[in-house]
Length: 230
Image 1 (tube, rainbow, N blue to C red):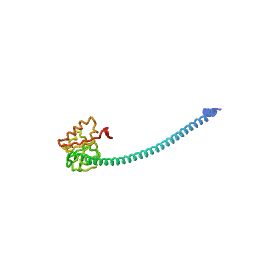
Image 2 (image 1 turned 90 degrees about the vertical axis):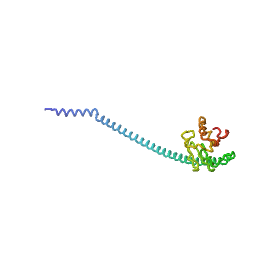
Image 3 (image 1 turned 180 degrees about the horizontal axis):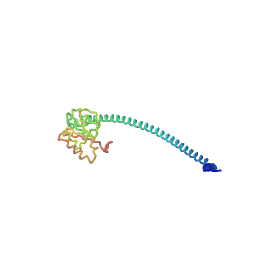
Image 4 (image 1 turned 120 degrees about the vertical axis):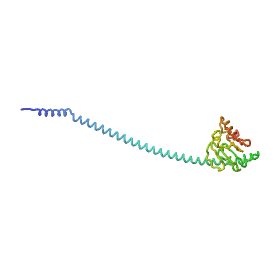
């Protein structure tokens, strides 16, 4: 009997598979594959879990963001409303204060000036630090040519006959807007607001506007008043 190479190849394959089966290699490979599949499945499940948690966190963050935006908008609207009410209130107080100063000037200071022999009618009057314009308004009722100077802009709503200038009289470039001839210059509760190191230049600037015929009315709070510490 002649045995060729094909026979031995067949026998080798049979022995090879027999050894594999004997050593339980297919089962081990199957276990390895099953473990890999299980690990992959676990990783997929973990990824799904993380994705779900991330989605939940994102949704919660979005809800908190929307809530914060709503609350922020609510606060802004409330602040805007309070600001508008405050502006209305301050505007009302501003105009009431203007009337108070007007009446004070009209009923006391103008009367006082007349008693001192100061001619009020038809005069050129300058109010330095005119504030709300109440004081100078009283003089406009005596056909005076009235000018007010204020370092802050109060958006005045007063008579057109009153010329209001916004600026600092200690600024040399501002002086060109101011006439040099006034019959009456008013410093009503202003001097106490001027910083100590600026008082000299301020008074020199006022002096430059005074002629021999100019009357200067200077008022300031008494020391023991509510504003005396100025």
